Length: 331
Image (cartoon, rainbow, N blue to C red; front, side):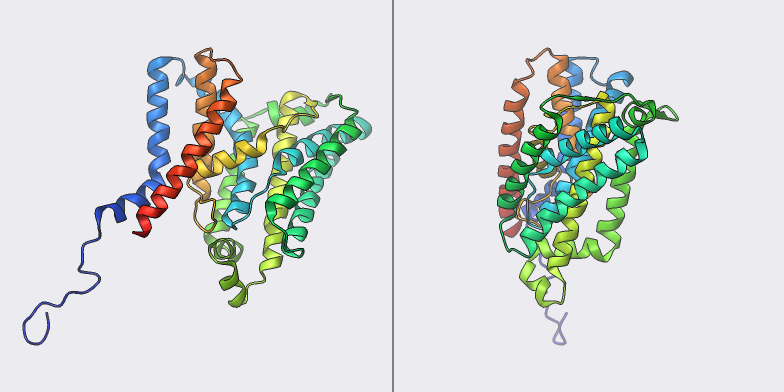
């Protein structure tokens, strides 16, 4: 109310258009609704879908996918992409199996595998940050290098794992909960804290939102970009070690196609491919959706190769939905 008794219209008093409220809500929480709806539909089609046994198996499968997607989330939040995650997963897995075979030491095998992943991430980060090269070109090149190195190291043959201590990582339980699930939960809790409570997290969002503005604000963009890729490499390596332990063998084709799956999961979780927007818990939801789709197709006796078709379709729909919701939010 002004001094003369007339009403004053402020920006706060103007009602927001409904779509301006709905679009952000759908971007943030829409995939949770999709997950619930999908679970309900699959339970109707196949009543075993939500059985305790199947849910536990599904959670174990999803946890490994979630680990590799966690690192991809950090990269995509920074407005980059990492196409080498599948190759890093495989390289760390077979290298750990090889070190275990040669030394018999599970801690050394795990340490070497994680180090290999971090070094691969470091190479990606240095070429992207210091070389000013496009991330998809750099990581695609590293993917090819690692793919050849894997075949040379393994002679294109699986490396068996005979250590009970090592296989317990992928096959063991803690208080009745599979170890891969425990690892995934700990990783996601840690990343939630990092992204929401630390300087690194704030800078990841800032770099993804506007890299030049972040640079002008005094952020050492190159250093943080390198750190992001190192973390992504280490997380990919961790997923490779867990998967190798789960299978009891270092398989040279272990991570084939995992980069597409990781990107799909990240986008399904609501992280924008353009960077700067997204939540780490959303990636976990995306992993659950993709895992539920694959699990449901298996229970319905759908041929496995259809899953690749479904994954591709899901990627296109997710990217389209992201674009439409972004446009609606900006109007």
